[in-house]
Length: 300
Image (cartoon, rainbow, N blue to C red; front, side, top):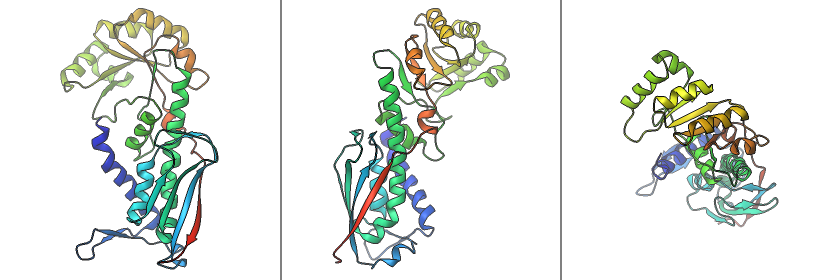
């Protein structure tokens, strides 16, 4: 997946959807030749004078890997294009509890309207990056790579896969459109491992990955004989994984999946598998604890 091409439109789509949830009426207005602006419906913010300026600091309450700056910035810039955001840590940095991450200054109403959406993105994506880095560190020194899955939050797939990379992990296919993963039901419907692999190789565009899931050593042997080059070992125990690595002998890449957690990942990596995919990186995360400290400044 070309993340450089995909990121910008996804950031804008994510931010627009998040602000629409909070502000309900999010329409563009044009004034002469000026750039389009958003009209936000935030009754609470209207308690503050229209021209009141404000500033805020964003602080982390826990150690984390910082991720999500482009989404955070876009939330504030959408509602106040003239706001100033100064970061004191870079994307992907390890940050410590009570560290100031950034400062924001601009229109007080816009800042308070954008606060929740901006923090939601930063907390969520930092959580994914932080979880990923933990797994990457746990398998350090082995050949195993930590990979994500399609088990992402709705509408946040590109963002969360970006966060996995920020945390030092690797991405699998972005969706059903850019990779083939043959599972049990596909094998059954297509008439077996050999026929389904042959058909996958026939229909796949050049360069597209073709992966097949196996549940037993016998199925692994059959997949290897059929020419499989990327094989998912579904819920294999450690003994079976070692046997799979020995049988494969480098003829295909092996990926472990299913029930993997921080306590088990090191032993799995030491079996010699090439890849370990973990759905929990994107679906079982706990948001990083951040806070925004706001203060008023002189009105224009």
